[in-house]
Length: 132
Image 1 (spheres, one colour):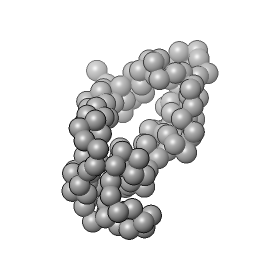
Image 2: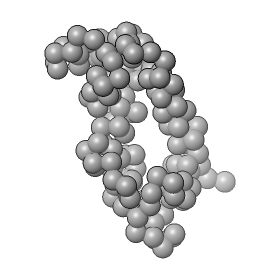
Image 3: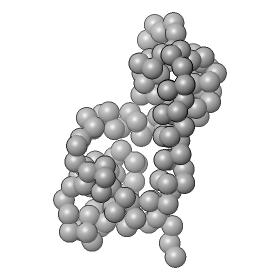
């Protein structure tokens, strides 16, 4: 049985997204060390981002600015999602770009399903057909 991106997503990405969501709901302001931990960054990187944009405190809005500039895997996915303008439907190129996947593997999944676009709701169908 082959490992698919759906399994990778469910085991390693989805839990991170849930952790970030809970973290953001937990308080109104956050310490740099806590933000670093939840985003898998070092505290120096968080402080460097804060300094580069003139940020003096971290709230929900500035957290998202840090996330869009951070170097971790989850930050990269978020920044690519923003760069793709968070579409309501995703082409194979969108999925490959946002999740940093092999373009041909994603195209093959779309072809296998005989579709051109997916929504966030139907994305797992594609993920299940992408070897990882």
